Amino acid sequence: MSENIITGLDIGSYAIRVAGGQVTPSEGPRTQIHIIGAVEVPSDGVHKGTITGIEDAVSSISKALEQGERMTGVPLSASWVGIAGHHVLVQESKGVIGVGRTDGEVRDEDVERALEAARTVARPTNYEILHVIPKGFTVDSQHGIKDPVGMNGIRLEVDAVIVQALSSQIKNLTKCIYRTGLDIEDLVYAPLAGSEVVTTPRQKELGVCVVNIGASTTTMIVFEEGDILHTAVLPIGSDHITNDIAIGLRTSLEVAEAVKVNYGSAVADQVPKKDVIPMNDFGLSGEAIECRYVAEIIEARVEEICERIDAELAKVDRSGMLPAGIVATGGGVRLAGVVEVMKRVLRLPVAYGQLHGVTSVIDHAADPAFSTAVGLVMWGAQIRGSSSRGGNVFAKFKSMDKVSEQMRKWLRSLIP
Image (cartoon, rainbow, N blue to C red):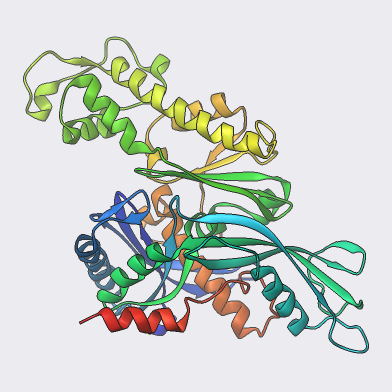
């Protein structure tokens, strides 16, 4: 039973989230999964997507896995793990080879060699490649080919996206996970995994941006013509809203978080002036605080986040010019009014991230905060499906690299 469970592990700055699911039969081409477990525990030892305390992180991950096992009823032995943060680099590369067969027919092994040639891009010191994702192929002078296998030519080129992460952060992350006794199926760039369940192929073809507002960072990934156009990690998130409220109300972060969750709104004009927050509800003395004042603080910070997103879109000439708009996910979009502010500032259609190809009887599995964990389950299901069907090397997601066996052995040698 346990080998049929696909597990996704999302290690965030605010919470560790674990989702477990199974592949279910589907009539269409899209993989369908059923989520049977989804748990969330507070995160310690993680800040802005990086490990800042090994022992605290191990403890938090262990708690999440224990709760996940109780919910699913089976031991969780291996997981697909999300990785994000400022240390992740995304760049484009090109690989060029000569077709190996005398009849000039392109085979799987030719595609593999082309992708391997794209891997040789000069990368910064101490970085490891996570994914090599093909955008398109050129056979001789014919451009824009999505799958060249079976075509004839003498020269094969591939335009690929290379996702790389800092070696030390990979080692810290995998070390924490191995110390819990969990094996790693693979490391996956978190925004890429999350986008799998909140977007459709049609949206990716037209042009869409998936924005995940987390606790300490906001990640975004832009797709156009089905390929990655741009990705970024912004050092600002919903914790910054809490900090602003704490300063504005001259209170603790705990009280500020409670005020944000229970009374917060990102659209100040929609909050009646007479609405007040009774501070004695939080064990504090003093006059009641106007809800609109808190909303003004929240709105200012949400506008800043949106302006940073718009600046990233401007770098690829897509500011206000994405036909499928913005898909908003992450714990930060739970706050009332965030989507309305995003629509106004970004001048684009904005929608909450609805899960596609996913069923579940667990209510919070559909929570925007779980999009990455559920996306990792979908990613694993895609990989298993393409492997069992014997798909060619161009099968979606097959281009990513496993964490090297040498690294696995080295990390396990550190575990007492």
